[in-house]
Image (cartoon, rainbow, N blue to C red; front, side, top):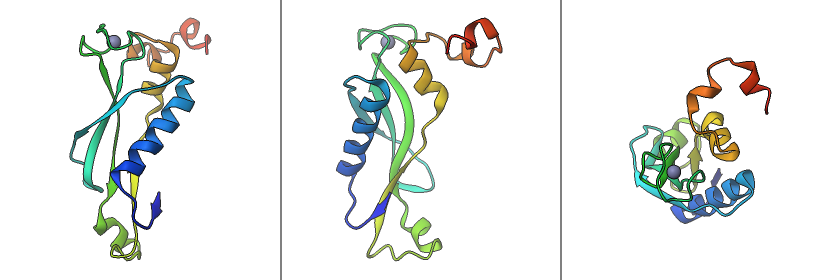
Length: 125
Ligand SMILES: [Zn+2]
C-alpha cells in the first residue's frame, strides 16, 4: 500500500483486520524486528496460536505464538527506484504465504501435510 503519511499503526490495523477476516475470528498480533531489504523498518508478524489459543502446543513450539509473515514500511530506496518521491509518499508491504494461513485456518498441526501429496489429506479442503 502506498499513500501519504502511512505508519506502522496503519500496517498493524490492516493486518489485524485482514487476518481476522481470513480466520473468521479475533486474532492477537505482535511485531518483532526483522530484516528484509525492501522494507525499513522490517518486522516479523506473529499471531497468538489459533491451534491452542496461546496455551502452548507442538505447532507453536510451546510459545503460544506463531510466526506468520514478514512485513514493514516500504524502504525509501524502493520508492525512489519506482519513480515515486519518498519525501511525499510512503507505504507498507507484507508477504502472505498460503501454507501457514491454511494451517491456522483449518487447524492443521503439521505444515508438512500440505507438501506430502497425500490426496486423502488434500481432498479434505
Ligand atoms: Zn499453539
